[in-house]
Image (cartoon, rainbow, N blue to C red):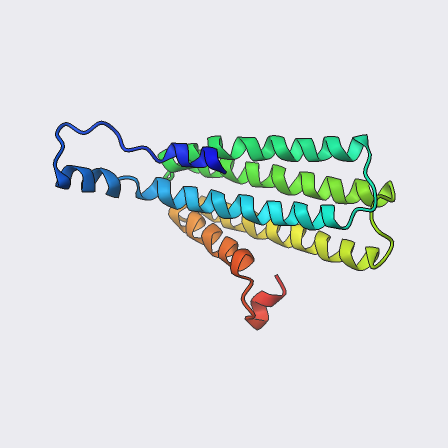
Length: 182
C-alpha cells in the first residue's frame, strides 16, 4: 500500500506561489480518487485473504504458491492505479484496473478451492465458511465486472463511481437490507 502513494506527486511549478500550488493540488484529484479506490481494494482483498488464512488448520507448498500469486497481483496494483489515475477517461485503463481486481479475486478463489480439496481448512463449519467465502468472491467480482462493462455505454467516470460505491459497501458493511446480502 505504501507504493500507491508514490503516484501522488505534484509536478514542477513554474513559480512558487500559493495559487500555483493549490492548482497543482487540485490537479491531483483523479490520482487521489484512484489511490483511495486502490487502498480500499487492497484492504478488501487482504481482509478476504486474512479470513481465509484464519480458517486454515495447516498449509502446504502449493497453497503457499497460490498466495504468492495473490501477492504478485497485489504488487501490480500500483501500476494499475497509476494507469487509471493518469488515463481515467480511457476504457483501456479502466479494464486493466479491473483485470487486476479479477486476478486478486481469482487467486483468492483458487486458494479456497485448493485448500478445500487438499483438506487444509479446519473441519468445524468448513462448508458454511466455504459457502460464505465463495459467495463474497463471486458477488464482488460480478459487481466489479458490471461496473466495468457499463463503460461500454457510459463514460468511464460512471464505472469508476460505481466501483467506489461497491468498495464502500464492502468497507463499511452497512446494515441496509438489500445491500446486506452482498
